[in-house]
Length: 105
Image (cartoon, rainbow, N blue to C red; front, side, top):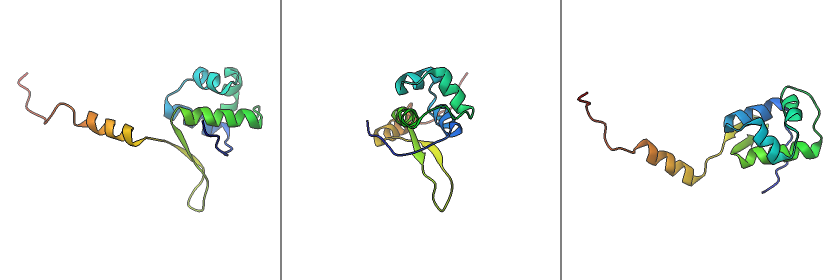
């Protein structure tokens, strides 16, 4: 797993976790953080040290979060990351079943 240099606050961590649809328990276990401490961090408490925040960031990236750094166009953010394979799978799911027809029900 590649370590990324990125500092986030609790609200961004919460947004990333929700976006990836991962529980507090799962992320906390992956990041080796106490789930109660993660909940407090997400609510604004500054209780995680730098190493814990980095492990949390890495865990969120593992589950599909992609962090957007602040630049001249806007502030920090998070979005989902999709691989080419994932995009192809989504496109296949959308066209699965053939053309739409009338129902005789």
